[in-house]
Length: 229
Image (cartoon, one colour):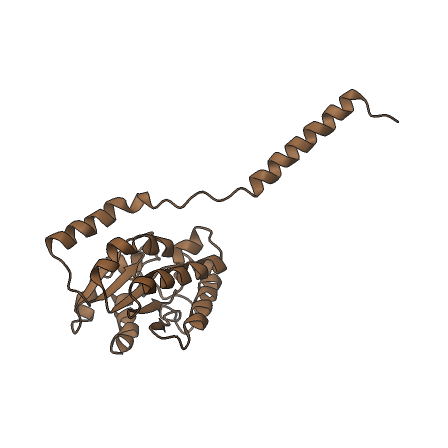
């Protein structure tokens, strides 16, 4: 039986709606917002202008674990250190701002702790791993002799449901780093865990996400042997 004009219109409308729905599903994700960090990056630059950091120092960069490491210089008094952590940042942010807060220092080593926010914000494990490789490629294109050390992700109480993905990123990064010159891996996954395999509340500030002084003491103990290399 021939399709009526009304039926043809209904079919056409359904096709258009389906196409719009599928287009919405497959739409490209929103562009990463680098501009939101401009005030913090500019503040770093002003500090550098007022008191230039020494060339060849050890640079710590990444998200809030680095930013909140208030005892960094005291924990490693044997070497000059620079803290360029900015809370909430992702690996791509460190890469993007490398010309402004990495390259000018010509650091002999870079300790990167980032990736947790990336996962929490919905980025897939493989994408975070790819971002790390991009960071390495970007830095070594400009500073081929600089050591890059990834301080691994570790679980927290607040983001406990993310623990398996944290571990997956760690494993991919560790496998990539293995045996390569100027790349190292500091494993901190188990650092906050107690004998029962759960995060220890006494190592975190009240938000149950960030380390307190006791947590940073353990983190420094993990990093210190690598720093001596």
